Image (cartoon, rainbow, N blue to C red; front, side, top):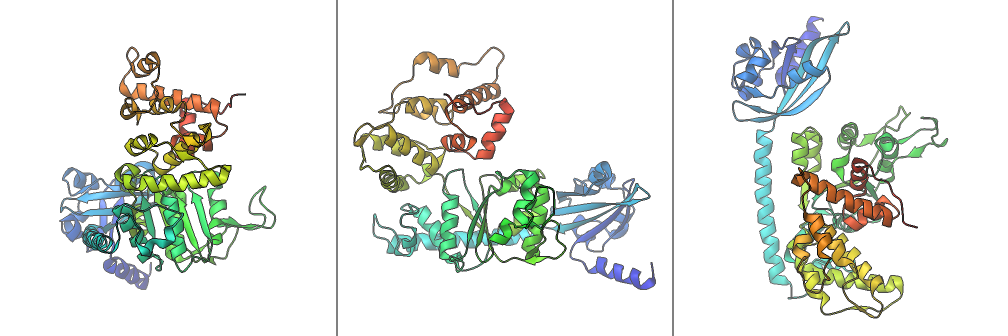
Length: 489
């Protein structure tokens, strides 16, 4: 290396915000950047004379990303805690010479300051939320929606104060292009709110591309998302194809179940977000893309990051405007409006004019609805179709369906207006077999429920709708239990 090249390299390392380590194949620290001393609490000279195994034993850093690379021979990323009480994200890459591992180059980014900024941001969000509560309380007439939310008519019901706060927040961030992360249980209405955010935005006339990250096979994910050039692979469209990212140009890209995104695709998505461009499969020229990104998940992404299933840098890119939608059991005020809207849709769809029996309301308001809005809508449709006359009562077999669902069986066992399941069957389901623990019993009950639905319903999508969970979750559970769809004749 020339003297100039060496000087350039030294300048890059010495002035970089990240902190660099060079470790040989035995774990001996060969070099560190100057900023590492403040993060790890040791002078650069002391660090250079140490072995990373010793540093781990002494609590200077834990775990060691360099040791992970030495162990696997592959790049690694992890969240690291230092003896100075700091949290850093550490990335490391192997360097090979003549086919053998020569050293590991790692860099770490201190997240402590970022964490403080996030805490400050959370405080500002809380203050903003309190302001919205006061605004909603002062301006809204009891029983009426805030006028600013008129665009939600016929789409969502936001009678509860918490949902009005969320809707007002989304309306205020809609004109921006800030990434929005929607959190909440399955069925709470994340997709509906994402669509409404799109309608409120300046991109409302553009496309809204809805992608379920868990529904696309990993082998097809890249071609579906990024598109491909003519002849990119065997069996491809001879004219090529624009991917979903390109199709969202000028509009909104909604990535549901973002936690299911494969790690390789996480890396590619991060690059698109950073660069604003993508490369089709088989292409050599990048293409500019311009879309608003909204993502949703029912997973805890922070835990996924800790477990190495989700990239930390992508998480921070997505978590610009986090919005948590509460489950239906925490906003029961919304149930009457949701029921009224669904009844209107069912009457219009099936050509009727049915109404609910007054005795049903106690049950509707009393259930916990673990499947949230989706489960409520499915229950109403089943009740509508089961009703012989104009008045809708509890559908036949509903008690059986409730008992089959372990998450609601206890609360519904004595609910008024629900028929009783035969005692023998209920006792059989609740008894533990010889040597069977709770985990095994729950797995057995889960398999029985899925086996029953596999014989009744014609697809994994229908089963997912019935259970109030995602279709990929149904597929995984069926594979785990060795089940296949076999509709009853």
